[in-house]
Image 1 (cartoon, rainbow, N blue to C red):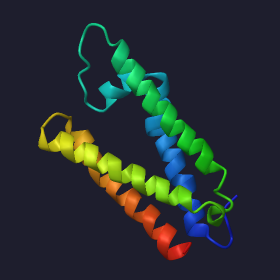
Image 2 (cartoon, rainbow, N blue to C red; image 1 turned 180 degrees about the vertical axis):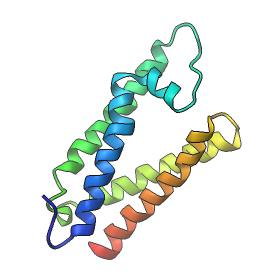
Image 3 (tube, rainbow, N blue to C red; image 1 turned 90 degrees about the vertical axis):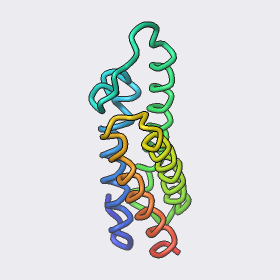
Image 4 (cartoon, helix red, strand yellow; image 1 turned 180 degrees about the horizontal axis):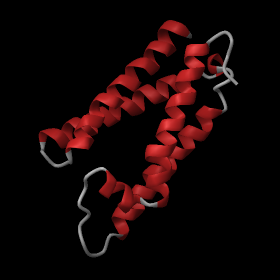
Length: 133
C-alpha cells in the first residue's frame, strides 16, 4: 500500500487521512454538536438545526476529500494535485482559525489547530513541489 518510490508522500497521505477521518470528518458528519463540545465550544441552546447542517456539510466535504485521497496512497505521484488541494484547504483553515483567534471567538483548542493546519499545508506543498515535481 505504501509506494516504494515515494514512501514519504504515501505515509503522509496515510497518516493525515486517518487522523482527519477520525478527528474531524466522521465526528462532524455523524455528531457535530458532540464534536463541538469536545473542542471546547458551548453550542447555543435552542434550534441548532442550521449548526448541525453546516457541521454535517463540512464533515461530508472532508470525507469526500479523504476518500478520494486514500485511492492515491499507493501511487501519490499519480495525482499530485491532491497535495495542492490539501495545501489550499490548509491555507483556508489557517485563515479561518486566525480570524477566529483575532476576534477571540473560538476556544483555545481551535486556535491551537492553526499550527496543525499550517504544518500539514507546508508538508503537503513541499511534497507536491519538491518531491513530486
